[in-house]
Amino acid sequence: MIKLYHCASARSFRALWALEELGLDYELHMLPFPPRVFKKDYLDINPLGTIPAMFDGNTFMTESSAIAQYLTDRYGNGRLGVPVDDPRYGSYLNWLHFGEATLTFPQTLVLRYTRLEPEERRLPQVAEDYKKWFLGRLRAVEASLEKTSPWILGDTFTAADISVAYALMLAENLNMDEEFGSNTRAYWQRIQQRDAFKRALESQEEAATAQGIA
Image (cartoon, rainbow, N blue to C red):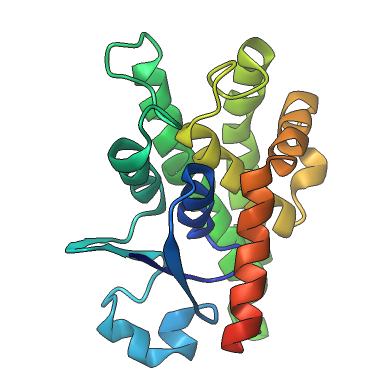
């Protein structure tokens, strides 16, 4: 049984969403955010104190986009992935990692310096600078969707969409979605209509309630 340690709507949502897209069985362990502060014994599970943490037998992983790729390659049977001999393979890998490395990174600094730090340590200028960084990088998504819609690679929904679309989910939570371009906005609306996306939202809410996590 796959075990996933997750905070509601955090970047571990990529892993949860991939599990739902692939119809895999899993155990979902909900944590308060950030767990390294509010759940100290989690450090015994993941010494980094970050989420996600996923166990699949003896396999242990902590990177959200890598987990999506792992689940796709190991259990996808052609779903969510792109074969290595497909001309889109390089683009697939690029978008898969772009979602985390390029889009989510600046958002974490916006989150930190607007919400997580105590009032006296918040830095509005830093948050604004990294918001602009994120929106600047998001232009690549807007431009790509002009050519590839409905999904980031065209007609095929893949793990790359999970990676990129999570960054849009986080942007909405940070009140940055009003600055999405028209292609990105329409893409985000399509994403939210996917059954697996809805199931992942329901799964985290039900697990949080059952496990007493606010």
